[in-house]
Image 1 (tube, one colour):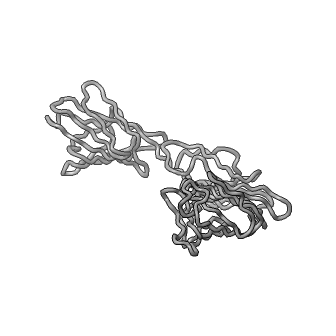
Image 2 (cartoon, rainbow, N blue to C red):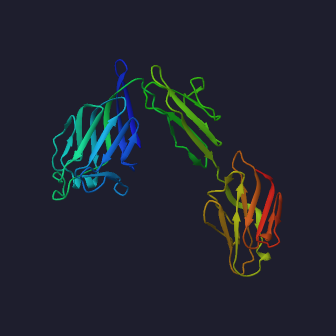
Image 3 (cartoon, rainbow, N blue to C red):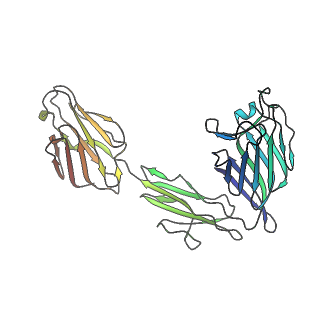
Length: 353
């Protein structure tokens, strides 16, 4: 995963950049983050290098090597940020070219400086600089910071969105940004690929219905960024209050009864549902999840319960489905309610807002 990219233009067609690469799973001993490739090898050691998910680090053992290679430029500094395990078992590290900063007990990093497109690091036999210095040596790191001089034509950093793409219960105000200084952002909301002829981003974009935003960053003298895409699904919540559907206790007689209610309308589903009661109303609400409600009746009560679906702005309820015990005993104030012969399911249809 790329944590940050910073670009500063230099003279001609070369420029300085820095990148942080987080530890991650290895594929055939390789961790690739364009334009870098980290290749790990056991060599004559006893244990193969591996990614430890629990520790969030890559573990390279005694006699093992990691080769850091850059495509299109030279690296000037490489800093391995040691994990907790790395601080326990840090071994002397050597480099094929360039210089390793003087190591000592308690180090939290291993730092290389030089000017090369490829560097191979080798792990020593003993944990000389670790807190467990009688153990075999290791190089265990959670991330690598690399600064380098790149060549060719630079590319604008891909735009990012805030808040992140996702499902929301209310309208959002979406901002777009790029880490490329003075770049211009263009975007679309109709699903088309943006270009410098698309709408120019000048401020937060209001999103009140489900929308996909695509954006690019453009700057003279640089390649356009890759297209960034974010989809926002707006599923407005609704509230349950006294009203529309009446549950008449007299139809149930004595005893403890339960009725489950499944509520859906189009592509959105009821969430954050609440219920209010009045007088001798003895119904109580328990919310299992975002889709199911349970309504209970206390023993021998002669009071009924009721609830009302309040429609959020911009929506109309056209169908509500009920599932549970004795759902045939529901009466409605608008629309039409029908129940199945087994009286365990029913459907209301109509139009209300």
